[in-house]
Amino acid sequence: MTTSGHHDKQDKLYTRWMVVQVLFFGVLRERWPLAKVNLELPDGATVTSVLQHFRVAAPELEAIWKCVAVAVNQSYASASLVLTDGDEVALLPPVSGGTPCYKGNV
Image (cartoon, rainbow, N blue to C red; front, side, top):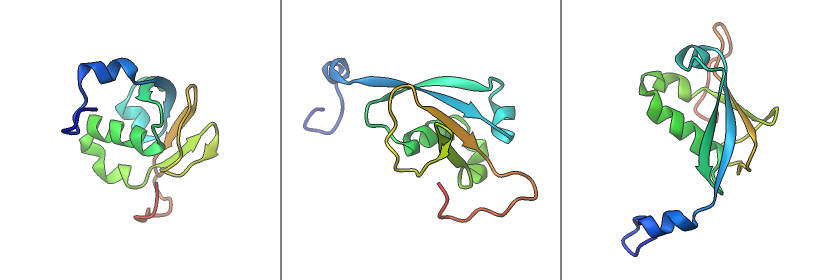
């Protein structure tokens, strides 16, 4: 990283990357026709990194992102969980008639 806080091309050469498999359910499955996608992230990325990636890709679903539960390797996970290469990340939106979400959700 440069002193100005911006990454330069040389930094990218030294960044380690990982790939996680992201699975979509419910309304998110309707938005992404593929049931799963591989997402490349820098080492040290968290569940929040995955959510932010898809929030940017689908801003029209902003209300849903506040309520999405996340499972990593088939166990519910917090937003701060650090991911590792090969993890399976499932994005689980609320279902119709379910409990309303609250701001404390992932």
